View 1: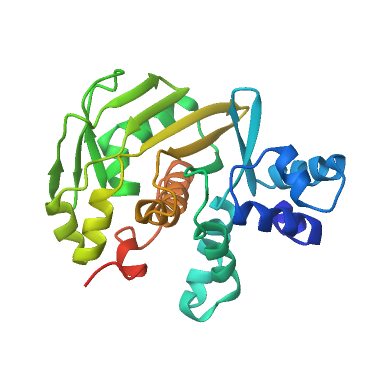
View 2: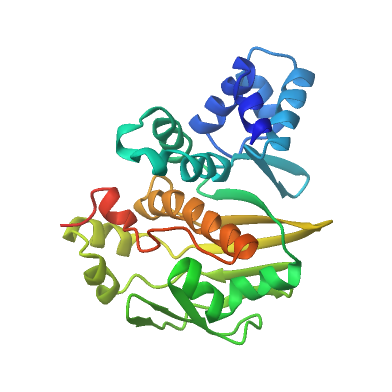
Length: 274
């Protein structure tokens, strides 16, 4: 966390974060062309932001795209803000919203966190109901083979659909699957407004990918949520939901306990419910 605060203390690095907030997923060349600093300076500042886990990168062919990573900001909130009445503390909450809420031209969200665990145990936590129920309040029925169907269980509902499938599965390294179907029952369980339900139903099905990289006694977990509608409602929900899920997953694997208020209602916080 010291590295996070040191990285945020530099105005040039905050400028880079502002640029990525305005348009996420930029290359080094794009960032250099948008900011009044030399390419080498941009590269050095990005290295500091990556070391602090405030920026994460994803390879797209030959290019490396830079994304804001909201996980460290969420960890700051979990450590201090929730303890002292979060609604009254606006500074960090505003920063968190700035990092997460702005629609992007490239509709994908990328988060990176480091967990003191093993790739095998992290894989268990991503796939086995005994784990997912505790930190996510969701369980899956699947054999986790590429192309296999997935049935979701959440809020007392069973969500099954032929298009809910495992896309990629390389145990302990990489897992990717299609997101669940936005059923009327799911919308009713959240008490979504008619407008929110119709907008979500009209958006395309998205996909989530988990990349697992062992780093000594830690594991680097990168979560990529792709195929979202630019500026869509699903993207807003994901940007608020994933930091909390990852913080809860990390806490469970490192301490054996979960964070309080697991059943928080993100749609309600965003004003999408009755």
